Length: 179
Length: 179
DNA sequence: TTCTCCGCTGAATAGAATACGGCCATTATG
DNA sequence: CATAATGGCCGTATTCTATTCAGCGGAGAA
Image (cartoon, rainbow over all chains, first blue to last red):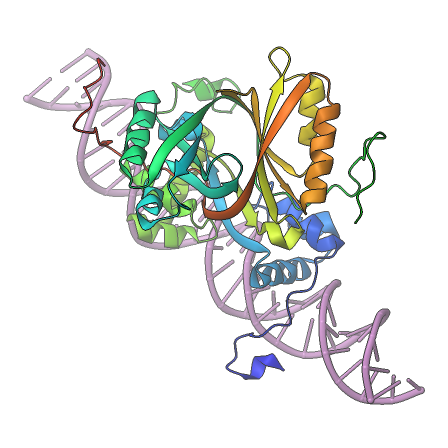
């Protein structure tokens, strides 16, 4: 038993795959995590303690990262959303560049494969603040150019969904892939 | 009193701006919304009922949209993140295009100002599934081209933050804007 | 078959959310 | 200026929920 090391579960044998009930639980919680375990149990067909135990297991396994409140960007004076592509000399991700993650306006930082190195998702109060952020980016050593996509309207924005599309349609004219 | 219409608060005079305590509450809750109101009150210097009243007010005003669980994309078999730019004939956002929001792999849909019309954030199991999604996009009437940025590494990903950077640095060599 | 393990149920308890009465500071009003 | 009204807070009481626990039963291994 792994438990006997020091009372904490460790060296778990690589969390099992989620079953149908786990997925339904996640499907409920990604929409609304304020419901009671009784309500959650009702929706997925379990008793309250069983639903609770499932959620605890999902937390331990890391499937559930955390539970957070989603706030309206307009309420906190950040109505302007933009995606900023950055080109750098060499392969970016320098400490200087990561310093921009200190700004609460920066929500995502990725390195990407494509015609740019990095991709940022940022929210600012207005174009003036976006310009300030871009100016800070251009001051960062290694940054050679940026390209911004200012969002005009958002039609969908939601957290990671548990569901997957089982069979993606293969266009008739397409050859089947080798594997 | 607006309350007297039918017992529900309506015609509120456009929610007041958030004060410092509201912002601190949001700052706590966007990190972890599972804490008790007693704990929340402790962190922001209020009694439990007062903290609760604040949160209820933030909910009513719409500043708090909802409370959700964040799940690990890898746990639900969607380790591949990509941003897909779409070009369309005319100005997109047709019902056919919005149909892709039915796929749980699609997390965001925006229209953007830039060299493309629309921007999608999608998560798939692998490149095969991404190809299936792209094939579906190309089948959509009006779509003329797409350009994808496959994410290699994610260094920061967090929900909307309540904080704002008070004074953006203005580079010395830059002229001050007119307003 | 029989044992073991895992997950479930239902009841009991600990703990949190919520309602309520009263206090104080600020603001509107005569 | 005095005074009433309002809004936000606190402390307490009550209700509801989370959490624990003992016991049951099915699936899988020996």
